[in-house]
Length: 631
Ligand SMILES: [Ca+2]
Ligand SMILES: [Ca+2]
Ligand SMILES: [Ca+2]
Ligand SMILES: [Ca+2]
Image (cartoon, rainbow, N blue to C red; front, side, top):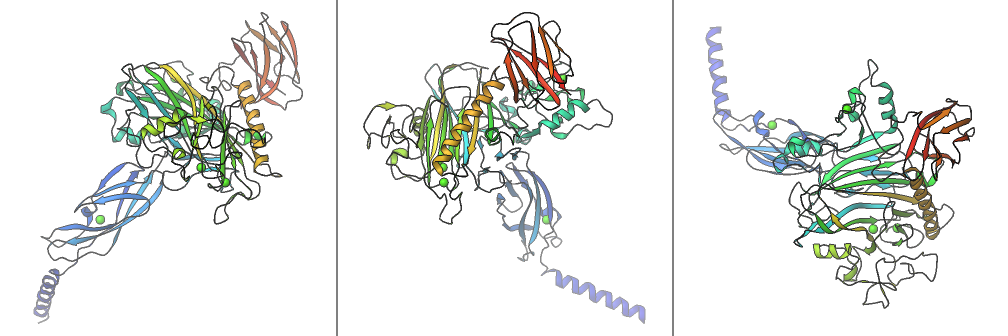
């Protein structure tokens, strides 16, 4: 009886399941994926989803997040996280049963997005966003980050990018252009490689910046051979060498090759070489893909870039400065002529629409400053009564020409370039309509008369009779500029051009916008002197200051006592014409200097604090360095 009843019950349950199944909704179950930012992926979220036996299902809808772009078809979601996104992205979807037409509940898809390509340099009074996509300081989506003072939430630069143009021997034009890399791209992360190696693996490897503090390197130098020492990931992955089998150059990021085997192996004591107390390093090129921002043919250049800064609270000029070192190498087999290298810099002194910009031809600098006080946008956000000025200075070359443009001005000729011909005009010191700079008034022949010049608004706004934007009829607005660094007659295969820049900010806390202009010029001059003293060898000489080859060479120079309490007796074997000595600390800061005028010279360093220093003997041709210890 009981057995019989149970049997009937089971049959009844089975029957109800069958009847119910015909109307059962499909079930979407959550999914987890990993992705690298800005690279394309295809996901099939259906693989773990449930639908009735014999039925099929499809993706019905996908709800995007703001962190990614996606499309989908019946079974695949094509996904790309935004270039500057990092973290967990969450999108949602529903599926549909193709037979019974029912929909699932909403299910979530979690994508863990890694992003090694975005970091900040932030060791001094500046915090700035760095990436390897060609346009510094902005995130290619909505916000910029060149924060000064660090922590203020206010910025003095929107973006900075290097443009390159040239012609080959047949006069064919080449152009790699970049303003904001927002509607297309001419520049891409990574070194120039053979075409078959431009693939997903390449992209995921080189979508990266490497950020290092000098202290991490010094720790590695003193610890690499200690038991238990683990090489920090950033030192282990430092891109010292390219892969020749992939058409890459052998030497990439600078490093000290302790065992002199031509190969970066930090486990054997090699270490990254940087400038400054902190550096962010990356490599990019104009060859990875067809150009879509300015649609030109790329020159096949590879750019190695080191952004670096010094933590120097007692030196406000240095503490308000970020340096950039660009090494631009021609990796094509063409010799280019009439080569232009032009920096596009969109300066924003806080609120963007009340600014001026001009240049200083003696400093080789662009200088932006506020157009009025207080600085502020329509919501009152800005620097207020003490707006900053910002200098962008070329340290190792002359500024060949300088021109300005704007997104928000009523004159067509001063509008920002959108076509390649307009870009080339700006890179050649012409307004976008091809007319020259007239050295007075508005600067254009429609509203000014006078001589043709190559530098727009070179005057000091504090000087009433000079030609600055303040004295022009243009009025304050939203401005950007082209700093045209140099024309290069011939740019040969495998030749490298080196550019050193310094970006210096200043606020006169007791003054107005024009007092900050005066102060930033003073700071820029201080920074230029620092550069000239501390980087005398070459723009290519990345960092002479923590080189282990700096041991006393008794044939050239003897120093004793070492360690010293204050007095150093320096003996050299020959008198070098115009020789001088420099005492540098390990950040490269000059602490003492003087003339070497005999074969035996006494140097007093009793005023410097105890620590490790570099004594450098330099004349016009050579330098010899010796480590010294001050007790
Ligand atoms: Ca799923
Ligand atoms: Ca080595
Ligand atoms: Ca402003
Ligand atoms: Ca601007």
